[in-house]
Image (cartoon, rainbow, N blue to C red; front, side, top):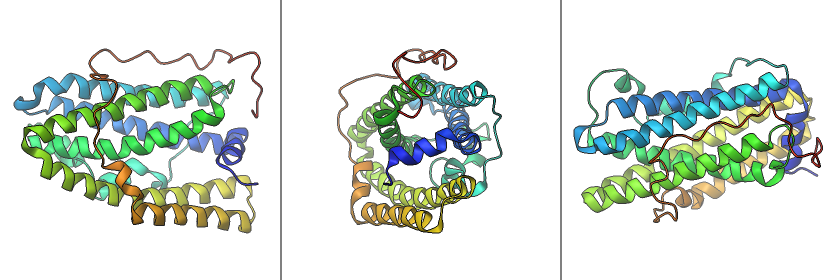
Length: 273
C-alpha cells in the first residue's frame, strides 16, 4: 500500500535517493539563508527593528542546510547536483515570487513594500515547509538516523511561520492590509503550481533511482495532480490566512544550536520504524 511513510522509507533506505533528497533540501535551505541575510542587510530605516529577526531566520535556514549535509556525511555520502526542475527555491524566484535576487545583489535599501513581499512569500513557503515537516516528524521523529534533525527543523519552521503571522499582522494594522492580502494570494496561487511541478520532477527522479514500475509512478503522479486540484479549488487559502500566533517574538533571540546528528538515537528505535 502506498503511503507517505512507505515512500519516504524507500527514499531513506537507498543511498542514491537519500543523497538526492538531502541535496535538494540543503540547497533550498542554503538559498533561503542567503536571501534572508541580504534582506536583513537592506531593510529600510522604517523597519530596522525587523533586521535581527530576519537575520535569525536566515541563520536558521543556513543551519538546516548544514544539518542535511551532516546527514549525508553520517552515511558516508556527498552532496549531488540538484536538477534544475527540482529546485523549488530558484523556480519561485524565476517566477517572480519574493524579492528578486537581482535586487538583493544591489546595495540599495529595500522599501516597506519589499518587506511586505518578503514576509508574504515567507508566509506561504513556511506553511508548505511546516506541513511537510509535520508529516515527516509524525512518522520518523524516533528514527535513529534522522529523528533528531527532523524535530529540530520542524520546531524552527513552526517558529518561522509564527513570525510571519505576527509581522504581517503588525504591518496590516499599520495600513498595509490590502497590499498584504493581494500579495499573499498571488504568492499562494503561484506556489501551488510550482510545488506541483517540483513534486512531479522529484518523484520522477526518485522513480528512476528506485526502479518504480510505471503503474506506481502513474499513481503517485495522479496523487500530486489531485492535491494541486484541491489547492487550486480552495486549499490555497490555508496559506494566506493570518492569525495571532500563540508564541510571540519567537525570532527575537539567538538561533538555537543545531543537533548532533552523528549521535545515536533512542536505543529502542530501529531502522525502518
